[in-house]
Amino acid sequence: MHGVVDDNTNPYRTMVMDAMEMNQSNVGQCSIIDEEPNADATIFFDLLKDSNEPLWDDCTNPSKLSVVAHMFTIKSDYKVREAGYEKIVEWARSILPEANRLKENFYIAKSMMKTLGPGYQKINMCPNFYMLYYLENTELIEYKTCGHSHYKPRTNKWRIFVTHKKLRYFPITYRL
Image (cartoon, helix red, strand yellow):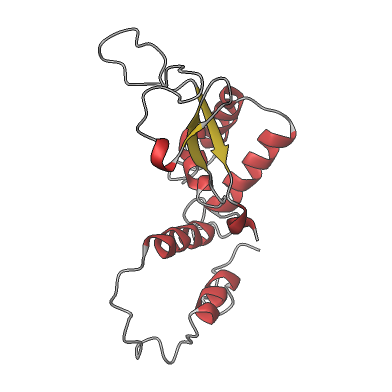
């Protein structure tokens, strides 16, 4: 099924139009059509564009987003390391047409897919698990309870401060 996708039958476009309560006849009448979207909407529209963008010209299936999603699934299912992932991508890019839009490496593909996840917050913590550097405690140099230093000793003058431990907080409200 390698044909041109009609905008009226594209399920992603239909979903966006339904969510915005728009149809083809009233798009031009929208008073907010000239406004810039907020950050969340921009991320969503970028992903929507990637889901509609073909992997190369004159290709309707698969899309750029679906290929990266499938490759991440294979990487996860078969425990492929980043180096292995990049070798597979290098090989795939060599057999695809020159103007393909497959992401060049793992880091770029991961940054594209990261926007699909709910995200997390990093919070510095005591190496002895006594306290968190959160809210009013973020600027402390030593831990209140044990007196342990907040940062690891610097090995040279150019190195930035590195904390001993970090807690990754996954807010539940995003997942509900």
